[in-house]
Image (cartoon, rainbow, N blue to C red; front, side, top):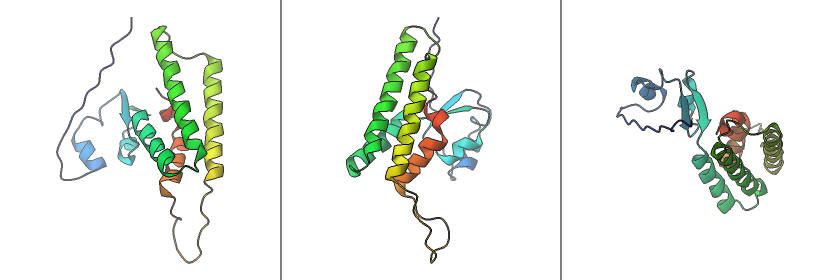
Length: 158
């Protein structure tokens, strides 16, 4: 028997934004399920829940890179990989499986890592300017690559 997926949205008003406001809403501090979100830093502070990064948000960001930065060859390939992984997951669910076969998982992990390497090669980290202090500005493309690399498990959680 397949359990139904439950999706709930709870909206609150608060004069603050971020971790304190989310904490005061008093749901995430107690939640033990899977929280699907856009990778906003405040959500990661709630350790009781499992985290999944929203693929719709990722696809929107990838589409923006594809449209505005055609020199970024990795973005279209990464989008294709995400959609292929989701299709595989959907097929597995239709067959009442709880996970993909080991060879598929291995193949997807390898493709994911190869695309991150390609993205890194197309976007080297900016060199530190001796005149300016602090970290060099990374930009939207490099920030997305960083998130895709750091949160690989949460991207592929679906």
